[in-house]
Amino acid sequence: MTRREPLNREKVLDAALALAGEEGLKGLSMRKLAKTLGVEAMALYNHVRNKTDILDGIAERVYSGIEPADPGAPWPERVRVTVLNIYRALARHPVVPMALATDEANPNSLRALRPVDDLVGTLYEAGFEDDGIRQTLGALNSLVFGSLLLTTAGFTTTRRGEAEQEQMDHYLRRIDPAVLPNFSRALPALKAADPERDFIRALDLLISGLVAAAPGRS
Image 1 (cartoon, rainbow, N blue to C red):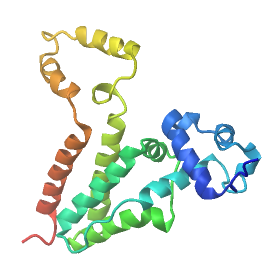
Image 2 (image 1 turned 90 degrees about the vertical axis):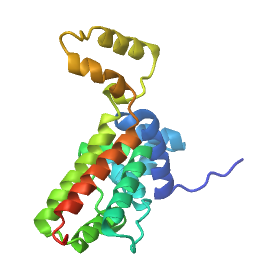
Image 3 (image 1 turned 180 degrees about the horizontal axis):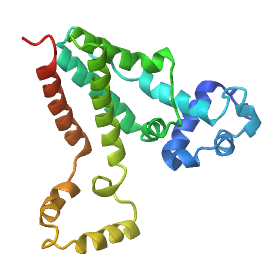
């Protein structure tokens, strides 16, 4: 008889991240997670408190794996690398930004907050004061989470299934260029979106604005 390896928090979070990736936030439940692990649901409570604790745990895991920027690089490059690494880490696990955006997860451990702390320190070094840092973090977070959420719906997502594709094609055929000339002209570009390329372009534009606004700029 094969002996089952003992359950621990790390194994629970591994399985939860995989399950949420397959079935989304609504598909992640203690019952389904227990079934995936081959245990009774009550056994999970020895390692996690509830679903919120699980979501905090998987968000912390994703954030703690974000590669830091080179501390010797110029501050604009450090901002760029840190924010791009955050975007890429979250894009690999779309359930995490969704949980954060809907306030279902709010990790506050040191490991989860390290990338944000690095970013704030870089902005202080650039000469920004408290209010400027608050505004800058808001802009950067809006870019990261807005870009990630937009890629889950509309023209920038890969449609799944023939029915969804047919529905979208029908919608596009109904758009009259005579009534919506500008939107009609932009449609081919909207459908040909490259999420990461577009994110990097927007990030570079934002950083150019930060460099121009930096208090330490001569």
